[in-house]
Length: 412
Image (tube, rainbow, N blue to C red; front, side, top):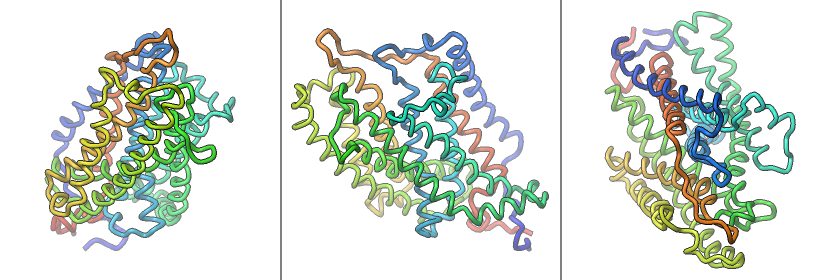
């Protein structure tokens, strides 16, 4: 049998199948890199952004993937700090997903700022009165934290473990992981909140402007709640999909169900507070600024967005995942988690796009944003990059500690 400190060799597909799988996503990544080259070489005139829509598709996706990537810090907090033991089965996968989301978001922001060589201005010439300063600081720092959390997974690779220094380094780093979990929770709490709070303080944009507690608008807290509600759903989706594609059991079914239930409970809390916020905004805040509730919803950004966010992709998945028989069925588990993630994407879309579409001056008109293929290609590149990184991590690292046990593998 394997020694105590030796990890089992797990079954994987042939190199030919793996390269075929990777090649498709590599082509998607290359397409996005070409689009990124055009944007950097020719400028942001390659995009659909303008003086009205300074936040376009990239920021929408950035806000969404950072929110969905919250499964990393939230799972880490639950596992390392609150000692929720069942998360041990997928904490490694949650870290990898978080690393992909945050590194992809930072990569997309590099293109979005137009002149990435001046990216250091955010730190060297920081605007201390802007929430974006806190956001860029926390996102960048948390990416470093995720990288550190990723290192112990890499050092568990069979080949790397043969190097004594790297093996001991990874083992000792793992021993103090609770410290990085706490740091990651602190950083994530503030940048998740500020990403929403940034829109809430825009007094000149009455669609997103909110009142709140002291200096914090309601959107600050709602952004945090929506992120920790959707993060576990994305983790559940990725793990379930990986199981189906590989034909192997990676975590126990009860773990996926419990994680989905946690996501549903948090989603219900978010929806209640979001509904209270919307009602107050529609009946008090907006009218005090001279706007009617219906003024904010015009084609193509009509009331259907609000309906989808609250009901189709809010209340519906919450009900599904709260019913034990439903979440114990693969179909409904996937629908519930997928709809939860979609609801957060719609919320971020409304913040980034609908906020800018609504006229606030007499001579302005209702605007419509049309992203170009270059913007879509870069979004595709982030997806391709994410699939490649997770595939490599699954193939060469031990992301799921119970995989050999659940599949009845006899490891010698």
